[in-house]
Image (cartoon, rainbow, N blue to C red):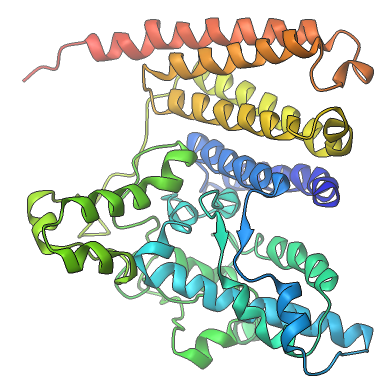
Length: 426
């Protein structure tokens, strides 16, 4: 937990600079692939995901250490070979886990967030799930377990394997010659994120593309078929927490509503998108049928609004940076404090992304977030020990909580509700 937090303190600024750099590069080249609110939504999703991971809010059904202990045939000794096998095993497991996420209803809920952006850029790589409570794909690491690769090696290689999947989420790199035959490139991954009939559910590979060629899921990017991004049932929200659970909520509702007892059980393991016929008829859902003619999700945002949302996400990044850098100290104060801190981060993200959606009820979430923050300050007479590093931090945060509530109220009453009060001409 603490080690991963330290790694993220280095990785987060690097990813942020690359995301902003891509935005600047696209602007200068006249091909800006990054919309502001979409980028902030993606960054916010990344915030919730890394916070969840650092807090350890998931349980492995079968732990890798258990598999090594019970099924290892040999124990590889060579240092290089151990790390090589670990990397390849993670990529093999990643391919199959990724494929199952796409192909079955229940597992798609864990992956919908990653495909929810209707743009393709470095920021969308940060859209990762918080909905996975039980990790069940550890079984795909069986090849590494059979060879006795130690669990600590997997723990070291896994973040590197994950971070190595960041760079190819871009439209600014074209085909890469002979590398197209070996590794996953931006061209391959553009196909994977596309909803064109020619491309959908292809190229599941994470680092190496030969898994797709071996298992029949490979598709090259076609010169005459420009990829269109997103999902066929658009999410229509910037709120990453909502996105993380909307498919699960749909499955629960459909399972409840169907009159067919068999369908109540099989819906979870049917192909992604399948719905009981009686429910589909009675409760139809919008689905993109013509991928070349639909409007991307967008909400109104003035310059002042955009600036304020950036203030909010910047504050959130500062909050989690302090958390990741001081996990041990916060734990020493109280073992439950890190979960209190995590709850504050999640409420914060929920509040300002609801504002981005121009939901007037965001004021309630914003007020709840700030009252929660003030309660922490009063009860601890500090912010999780931060006053030892930053004198007067309590007063600065108190001012932020009050100001944040007032500014959000301004946007709700002077902007959002005013829009909704304007009559529509017919």
